Amino acid sequence: MGVVFVTGAIMIGVIAGFVAYGVAVPRYYSLMRHAQPINATVTSKEPENHMSVWFEYQVDGRTYRGAGRAGDIGETFSSIQTGDQVPIVYDSSDPASAIMGDPQEHLKASLRGVIFISFGLLLMFVIYIWRRGKF
Image 1: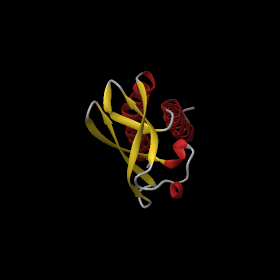
Image 2: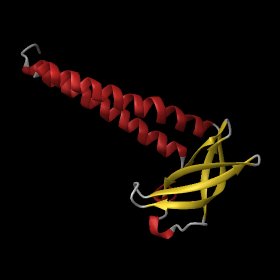
Image 3: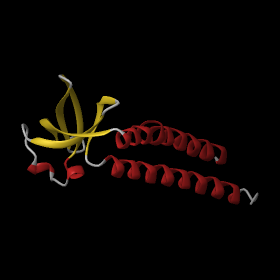
């Protein structure tokens, strides 16, 4: 049972760490460094998908699409309608990467998640060692 617990905890930590650090943190860091604010047009809303707001924007004549949350720009989901203009930030080094809201706030939230997951994983490991009497 103990080996399964530790193995499961490590797998969860590795997967969550990869998702949080391997994807989100570098993306938000790049968005912070190369931020280009622009207005986007709301194309759809998905209340069943975490209240997602889908938007389109153009950079150098090319159309891109992204999604975000109304709260990231200080709005409520119900206050945003299809066709509205919303402020976004896109990455000038990768125009397909864009978010609603402040990239620095998204980066901080991702880093807090990585720290929380790392602390939880460490705590599970310490409890496992302690319960086995090796601590």
